[in-house]
Image 1 (spheres, rainbow, N blue to C red):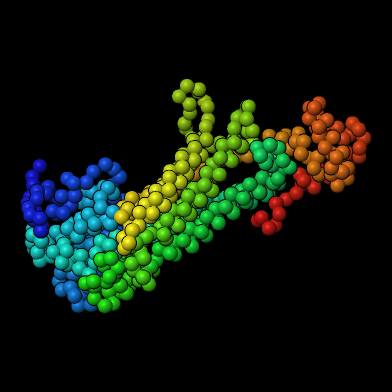
Image 2: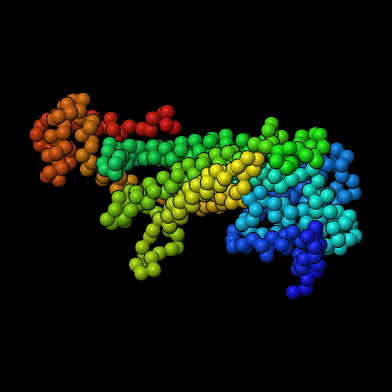
Length: 467
């Protein structure tokens, strides 16, 4: 491998000749464990937005020469577009402020800018990674800002649209079931309960998703205030007056979503409560999805010896030993993702608890955990939507279980009283008869009256408030 020599305040260090990073990144590669995961691409690319906005603000405020600032902005735009991903080799296992990744961004952009200005890799002139790319900034305020920007962009651009797609599909399934008037046996404590409309199941799932989307949107708003401008320890040292506002204006224009200066920048460096709140809402969202997956798995159990009220879509997958066996594979994938998202929330909470004095020192692992949850859910949801859309109700099986349910007797209590109906259900259970058969055998009421009472359950449409 051909190498070049880069220098920093600690002296010379060898760097692969075709890589754009510099001495600090090379030292970090040898000093820290490089076990995966690497720093998320969402973080790396957002550094492009952050550095471009910082350079723009510095030029506007007269503290950065336009020729150098423009070269930095052009390089940062390449970074934001993903053109420079290969030049960010570091894992998340580094200093807890994210300094090594911030310095990697500074070095890469300085090298790219210098080459564009006619220089060579490693020149550190005319654009210097610290003096120019990192001007008016510290890792203390830059990395927390990038954490917020990356998380908000991923939630807005990927997760919320994916959840909306699932909610819309469930609304379609609810309407279909409502038009069909299909009833299924409700179950509480895993035991038979009264019949409920099949549409109610889809409505319940959809409502839980609507709540999840509302909560996610609400907590995401807390990511808009940024600590940028607080520099070292929240002091604002070496940042010109007006830098935070100018930075957020430039960033908003580039990011396409609004960001504002944090009222107390130091708070966004010392702790990351907003990101932890997001991690917790991601966990609740994953639990809502796991609940849907679990319901489908149970209702589709069978096909001969289970509930068999739903039929799974063909997925081309089967058992390695039992030919033709069909399993709820997508549902089980979602269950595992839910477990991982819960673990990521726990990681975020633990990482946030490391905050001492002016700085939280587990930023990389915290943001990686949050972004991993967003990525997992966003990637899984389109497949899960197709899975849920392909599930078909077994109307005949549902009608059979409703007819044989002992809990149909609940509709008779207004006419016969609780105690008498309890005797009827015990007798029906003991002899394997239906409620209808026992009631008519004892001539407890005319069949027409029985049918009318039972219809108050089996003919009940989905309540308007559930639509």
